[in-house]
Amino acid sequence: MKSILIICGIAIAIYVVYKIYRLQTLDNGLPELIKKGAVILDVRTEKEYETGHIEGSVNISLGTIRERYVELDPEKTYITVCSHGLRSVKAESILKERGFRHIYNGGAWSDLQKTINP
Image 1 (cartoon, rainbow, N blue to C red):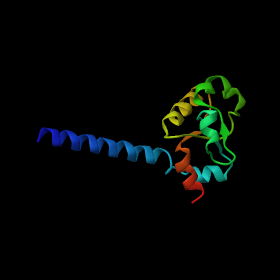
Image 2: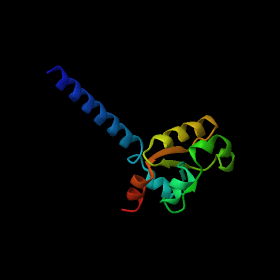
Image 3: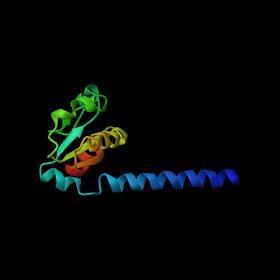
Image 4: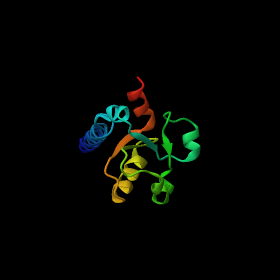
């Protein structure tokens, strides 16, 4: 009985984390931001980017973002994306630490692509 409760608790926790992730990424008006000129910043590696990406996105890997952020305009709006949504959260945080005010997490690039190009 105890193991069933633990498994149910883990399942509920995973579900809650997923719902929070969805609310913070795809459901917060990102398609409208893109229509208004937001730049999609893909923080995957170059090799990952070459396997597929959102047309018009900019590729600066998370591993180089601390040095290459100077290539970005701090007045523009950016939506960070990666393969699963974890690196994009970190990139969003790094850019905010460096004074960027208009940064949003787009999560997984493939999910965002489906949202903007249904």
